[in-house]
Length: 124
Image 1: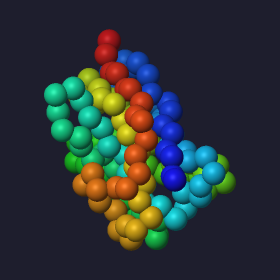
Image 2: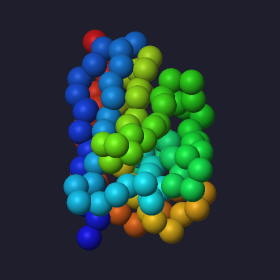
Image 3: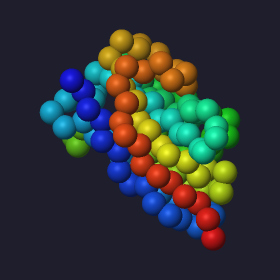
């Protein structure tokens, strides 16, 4: 069974950067659409970004466009979420999710496999 492991979260000041990683030991993520989601306390889980398995196309939530970048490194079997110009409202637990059946990306939380999440806190 696919198990996803997120890393790279932490505390950062407003305007700072973090890079989150999503790995799946023993599995090849090339064949999976990978999504990043986040959930702040008292709020619903929100889709942040997704990268497709078919052509590597990407989509982003309007709230992160121009600041976040999703990418794959197939040599390391890892998907990254580079987060720049972070704002306090980006504070949340960030999750990566995977699904082998999606040909196109989506920001709906309909992925089959989910990681445990990594905390991102943006505060001065």
